[in-house]
Picture 1 (cartoon, helix red, strand yellow):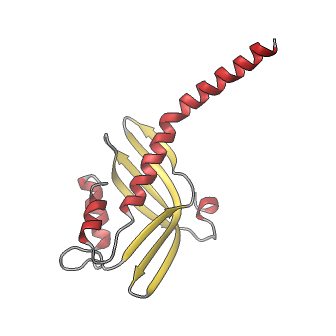
Picture 2 (cartoon, rainbow, N blue to C red):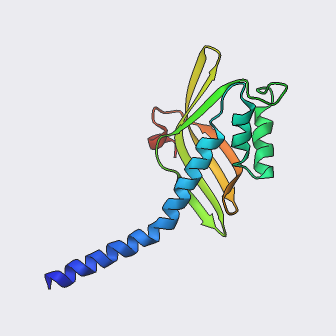
Length: 151
């Protein structure tokens, strides 16, 4: 009887793990896209072009419009940006290859000798295979921990 109960529990655990795997993979991929998109170096056009690879045309257009005024004439960023997640991406919806998620974290921006760090959550929508960002919005958190208070 004990063996049957143990086998039943083991089977149930394997089924639950198998069901969570696609969502966990989506969460991990989404988190990596956000980190790659919000991490670039001042004066380094190649680092911003690398971020461009993470976006759809629509998503990149929105993102680069928000960067206006913070780009050199050649298109390189005038500041360094680094996003560090405070926890895993939380998938809020997943349908037909489109994913909406929230990623809590800190965004550090450096310009010359000035450094500013923001606690925020990034709301992101991805589409396609492989996924690309179709919309990205940064929402500043008012509390000490983006992971606990900003989701």
